[in-house]
Image (cartoon, rainbow, N blue to C red; front, top):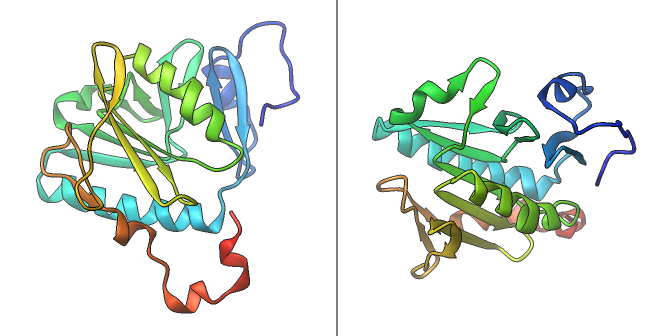
Length: 197
């Protein structure tokens, strides 16, 4: 969803700093303000599971750090995004500031919803490729899929998954079991509202 607020110039990081803390996700892509609603229950559940597993791996291996949205990633003057999850390896620690990350992370993960699918699948993907983000995952909680992609010659190529396992090409040793990420506890599955995104 694009905000109704319009400026006579492209939006910047300074404009983002003035946005309200209202539970929405504010980003700038190509100077355009993009506003997403608060995440759904399913989105939150999937995000937490992924974050727990990824953070545990990078800490145990002592190779980097993971962050969850909201955490600004400044890719350029008119491109400031907030991936749902991201990883920064130790060798890129100098990019981390008190207010976010300057430059691309080593891995960015977007969890799509009906309102964010176009942005995540097209606009962000193109922006991430332009700034040389090495690995980009698109997680679809409704379809229960993780599309893991790596940057090859300026374009994202899907990485194969083996029996529901997603292997990172950038984060050494990181393997995610999609069945664990998308499983729903029986007591929660019985609630009528869990089927709604």
